[in-house]
Image (cartoon, rainbow, N blue to C red; front, side, top):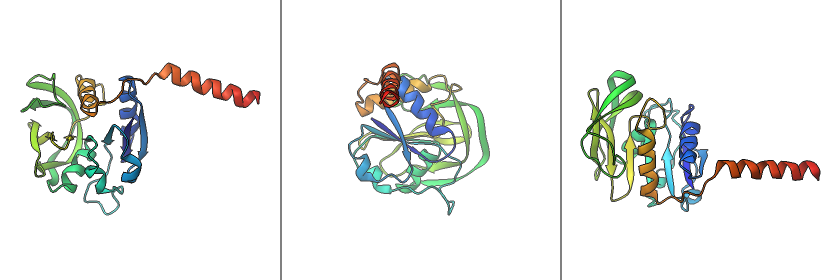
Length: 208
């Protein structure tokens, strides 16, 4: 199971839907879900959201989640949060990046495996990571974003400033699939069987 921690907006639901399409069960959980509840999941995704890591009212998050030894993928806000919590630097961008951007892949790495040297991605952010945390490498950038992807393969921690879950990122499903491979996630999820189970349960309750 992949836990998708929800930091606001529509992102978490879209991420969970995409992961399920790759035949892995994904569950959406609150941003402040305790590490104890997450220690047995196969992977964790920190979703995007409208907040800034510097906002006093930013969604709560337990930093120990990043120390569980479970693979974690931060997307957009989740990417910035990961960098901020682990000692990197996040700043407001010179210009808000919204729309299609050209991603320059600097290192293919595990999560970006199968991408070409230049790819189309979808960006939607104001803040951005300008310095990665200790142990991380810059994996990709865009003309306006110096750290569009970062990774620490040893700890299996990855961050993406772009949105792999939207159709405007053509290779986005490849990126999510790569992360599921890093997690060693079991591909046993079947939406049809799941819906059949729900229908059967409803019939039982109504019949009873």
